[in-house]
Amino acid sequence: MYNSISSNADRKSTDGLDKVKQDATHSSDNLPDSFHTCPCDVSNATKLDDTQLTTTVDNNFVEEATRVDELKIDNETQPTEKLDHSYYLTGKQRIWVTVGLIVTMFPAALDETIVATSMTLMASSFDSLTLAPWIATAYWMTITAFSPIFGKLADVFGLRWCILVCTSLFLVTSVLCAVAFDIIWLIVFRAISGIAAAGMLTLVLVAISKLTPPDKRSKYLGFINLNYCFTCILGPLLGGILSENLSWRWCFYINIPLCLLSLAIVYITLKGPGCTASPSGSLESATFLPDSPTTTAVAGPTTKEKLLALDYLGTGLVLAGIIALVLGIEWGGSEFAWQTPRVIILLVLGVAILLIFGWVELKVAADPIVDLRVMKVRNVSISCLTNFAMGWIINGTIYNIPLYIQLLDGAGATKAGLYLLPFLVSLNVIGLASAYFIERFGQVRLVNVLGLGLMTLGMGLYALFRHSDLGHPALVGIMIIGGAGVGFAIQNSFLPAQFQVAERDLSQATGLINFFRIIGSVFGISITGSIAKSILIAEADADHYPVSLRYLLESLNHIYQLDESLRQDFILTYIYAIGWGLFSMVGISALAFCAALGYQRCSTQKPTEK
Image (cartoon, rainbow, N blue to C red; front, side, top):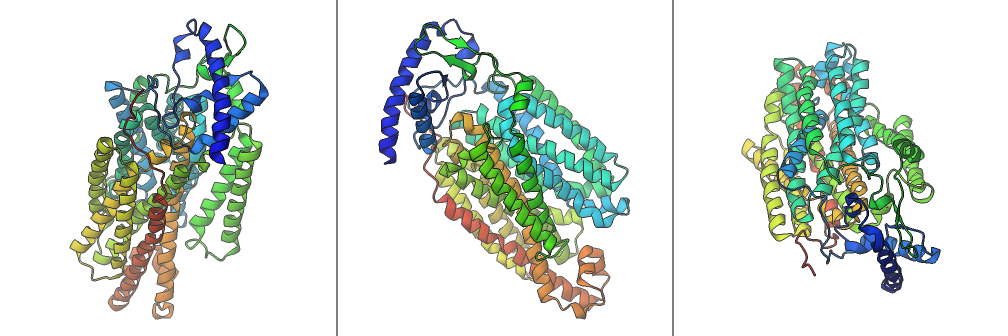
């Protein structure tokens, strides 16, 4: 039935569009050069682009064309005609833009984890140790809440200026964090930094996806993704070194030269039709009159009109829903028990608001801030799930392995962070290898499935962490396998979705997938920690210790104050509990692997031109 509807509507819309284009051609030669340059749809060739033309033709024809556009959003067809890709960057400009984007992402990703080993020192310097978790929570809360909306903002205001504004805001808030004189202000500035970081992380992925050709995109997306993973794993180690040898304030001072360098490179190099908002008189704002010998170019909207047209209701709902959900996840099992009314209300309220948000975006909003229509594309939905799993696993590993090593060996924060290096090295080496494999053979689906399978094997081996007699060679081997699986999969996790959506939906799809990776990170930190804590409480005999379990969990120093026999008993139980928390990630990894088997086939190989 689908094929019949699509075929009939397609024939009608094609006939109408041929007539539109024939009439428009008479005066197209007199239009500005920008008229002939517009992003082309790399997944559905010219048919999808045709339906984007704003016309004043018969209403029945418009309805037919729109219906074809909606029906064909998940079409698997690859381009068969030679398309104009003049907006793709080439040569030195592509290299410099990639360098600028890598530098842009670096401080935003670094701030996700650099406080993991230093936030206790930060809070202690203000005599506010109980507020230490909020230094990380405030950043994660806003980075998660704001990440879905930047894909739309990039389409409205342009990639270049959005990146420059976000980086400038991040620079200012980093300075304010470094000089904060009170922990409340530090938490507030961290929250504002999270807003800027949400834009930096999302827009970098959108930029590299829109400005590189499909057959090269795997390699350049790989550089960005590996930079993200490298930075997240480097964060705890660097935070420990800076805090122990200089001051915790250097965790924020280090962002200043990075942001300045990013601003300079992006301002100079990120230029071109794909980097700015649609100019007045562009193809997107043209009105074609099919029965007229002339074509009228309608001026594009002003900045004020763009601001007034934004979906503020949808933005408010998504922010409120995500903040409530993240707070419930962060507090559950740490600040409060999962069954407490405060946590339950936050989780239920967050889910309810997000459901209302979905209804508003699909049924009410004229120009939705998050276009959930792209979720109808199978590969987009699967990529959201796989990135959710990878965010969970990366941060679950980053936040738990150093603690595991500290308990196992009594090592300091810096030495414990070094044990993440096997995970990091294998992730980067295998990730780069998979990028070149895809560039050579174009097998995107195969690489994703193999990578997620290897990642699931690595998470299964995490079960061995439950045993305190696990040798260091075995520990390193497990980390290498886990890192290789993540590197294999995360390298190309956006490509299956990007090859299945229209060019106009690329920013929205990329931003949505990145949002799921970020919220997966929040789940990974919170859920694995909660599982470990629950098992520890269940296994440890609270009456056996002279102080409460809650007191022992507040600091490693409290554990070391116990008598030797009690200390050893508690540490063994704690190691066992953390091992279960790490092993629990095999479930989400297996789910992602099974979902990846459903990817529709796609390839980076150029089709035969006709």
